[in-house]
Each structure stands twice: as structure tokens, then as C-alpha cells.
Length: 208
Image (tube, rainbow, N blue to C red; front, side, top):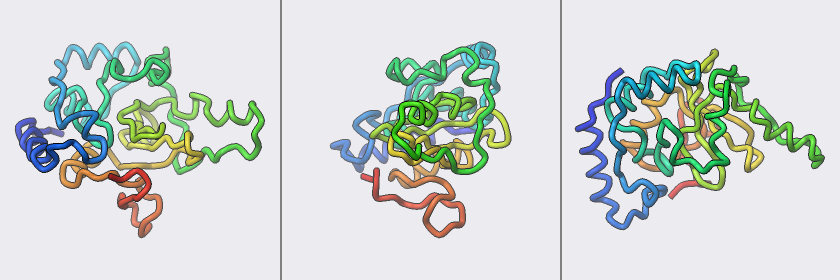
């Protein structure tokens, strides 16, 4: 898997030229600008520290294009999580990323009662073990990249803040990112709603 940074930057320049006021959804957060790429040593150190191997397409993006920056929604987070609020840095907890991702289909229904125990279970961090926070969609919705298990490499939406559970979002990082470069509008969860063919469908909820 390879990315052409010059090609990505050219496309970002075009998107910026068509949105000079940064009014497109999420653009004010990233300004269509990429962070500098990482070097191999940085990526290997992260993988060793957390006991994971990053999916090839995401790894290639970090090394060839940028360590986050311009991307879908509010952009792509840095690998070291330094641009995430402290409360959202669960990825850095010991063993968190190496844990087994527990989902193979949409699930994690909202609690049927309002007890504190039910709420705690619903928002327990074990629900998102084995996944890396990639992007903030707004209103607490997050896009996460699965790092192990049968869903390795796929993206899932964590919509528990809106009682939407955890649902498949895109088959892989490259498809998600390139879809945004072609059509920089938010899209709803992969395989959820629409015509049922498993393709992302345009959404009205968090669209521009």
C-alpha cells in the first residue's frame, strides 16, 4: 500500500481553494493542512510500546503522507495522541490497543434502564479495546481503527454518546481517506442504512 503525498497535497490545495472561508464541515479544525510524516523509528516505537502492528494502509499514510492533520470530519489525530484531550487518550492505557476488539457486527445497544451500573457497562472502555481513535466527528462521535482480530484494519464508529452503539464505518483506512478526498462530505456508517449494499451513504445528521 502506497500513498503519493504530492497527489494528496494537490487535492487538499484544490479543496482549500474551493472553500476559502473554511465553511465545509470540519475544515476549520484542520485547514486542509497535513502534519509532517513520521519516520520508521517513530512508528516502530509506537508499535513496540503498545504491542500492536498498525494496518498497512494507515502505516503507509503516517510514513508517506502525514502524521494526521487534514482528513474527514475534524481531521486525523496524531499517532502519539498529543492532539486529543486528556480524557480521550484511552488508547495510551497499558494493554488497551493490544486488547481484543470485541465486535464483529453492529452492537452494544444502549442500556435499557437508567441505573448507574447499566451506564457504566455501556461506556466501559472494554467495548473499544483493540481500536485506535482516528477522528472526531463532532458531538462526541468518534471513528476508530481496529488493530487486531477478525475486523483488523476496518473502521468503526463509536456513537455511544448518542445511544448509537458501535457500528462498522468503512472497510479500511485508505478507502475512508480517499473517499473524503474525492467527496469531502461526512458519510454514515459502512453497511448501516442506505440501500443495504454495504457502501457508505450520505447522511444528514452530521453533514455540512
